[in-house]
Image 1 (spheres, helix red, strand yellow):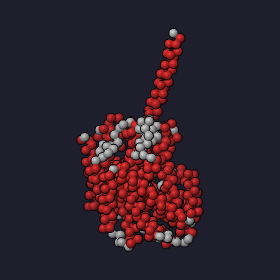
Image 2 (image 1 turned 180 degrees about the vertical axis):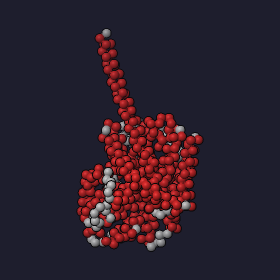
Image 3 (image 1 turned 60 degrees about the horizontal axis):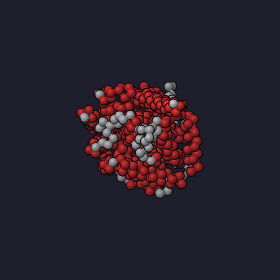
Image 4 (image 1 turned 120 degrees about the vertical axis):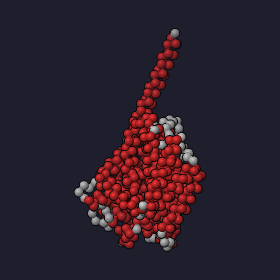
Amino acid sequence: MNQERNILYISLTLSISFVIVGVLFNDWLEDQAGVFLDIAVTNFNWFYLLVGTFFVGFCLFLMFSKFGDIRLGNDSEKPVYSTLSWITMLFSAGMGVGLVFWGVAEPVSHYTNPISGEGYTSQSANDAMTSSFFHWGVHPWALFGIVALGLAYFHFRKKLPFAISSLFHPLLGERIYGPFGKTIDILSVFITAVGVASTFGLSTIQITNGMNAQWGIPNTITLQLGVISFATLLFLVSSWTGLDKGIKFLSNLNMIIMGVLLIFLLSVGPLKQILEVLISNMGNYVGNIVPMTLRMEAFDDGANKWIGNWTIFYWAWWTTWAPFVGSFIARISRGRTLRQFVIGVLIVPSVISFIWFSVMGGSSIHLIHDLGHTALAESVNANVDGAMFAFLEYYPLNSVLAVITLMLIFIFFITSADSATFVLGMLSSNGNPNPSRLVKMVWGLLTAGAAVVFIMAGGLEAVRSISIVIAIPFTIISVFICWALFKELKKDIMTQHNVVLSEQYNDTSNIDTSNINNRV
């Protein structure tokens, strides 16, 4: 009990200290984050790229290997949630807000400022979509999946506590219950809190930009604080209702609204071109995934800077989300086989992301490249936070679409926050799968406060800098998670093999004995 309290108190202290430093020493935090960011991107970009590649390969290996039939739970268990609800919940927790934020902004940014060559060309348009597919494809879900798979396996099948330290049981043994294991748990909770707060900050900025574009409300710090306060109240209410009511309902509602928005834009947009973008760039993505994954430009500082600002930032950002999203996915994945898990966590969400970017990114580039609306590109480059709303102005019923988009962002915001408080409660309560409401409320208020710090520290640039710095230690931890998981899976297969041999031996013994008795 003391160790459980220590995890909660120490992780809370670290998170509160981060908020206090951010408020009192705002400029210093921004400057220091920038310094560490330069060091990380300049000296460790190769590490992020190699680790991301390794995680994808490891997940695909598990899916096609003999380990794929192992179930996350007892051999006879069935999945707790239907496949549809499972997909909607893991997708809403994992990417919802980010997709809305970057759906237009990233493809247009790549189209106008490509990694190499000239912008505003057919080649940069194709490359822009392929790069967007790459950043939102299997790589982030592999980062989430490693943590999720390990937690679900060790908790539901091996009956260990629902804590990040449990993933190291094959390497550390009973020491996971000591200071070393608890240090891992504390670090994981802190990284989760910072990662979640970064997305809250992005969501708030996008919501207030939308309100400014739609109704002319000045986008001030007061408005942003008001949005955070209102959203915090709503997700705390949702968190109070529990996992099966609040999060499940909101996740399903998210996907419905998202589907309505996509169908409308498909019906009034360049349908043929969108389908061509989807199909051709899925082919480009699959065919070029290895070169893109390992791409570094040793003699081109401009290209290296592009890779650092986009690919390395994303890999680091996903890593800060890995403890949170991974824990949440693990919590709802009981009863599925490893093969079902990898298909559901890697492949299905990636395809949904491809469809989203084809509609949003393909349509926005069509407006600029084919129809000559270069003002959209200028608007996106001047204010990436308001890119989605600038794009919707070129469509009929744009006022209605803007309101629907605001609803989508807001509900994704609440869903992610709700899931986050649930996970933070679990991880800081020694893996309790049903944390107390009080603990969830405390973490909800704290992450909201950290979101305010990100906004005060400079918005997107602060998120970019601090996320990469915070992610470094957990990236290293994730490599050891793969080692520990593989080691335990091998033992599991060996145990199953021995059981089968034992049963066959017993059956043979029974048959022989029967024959002998009959002869007698």
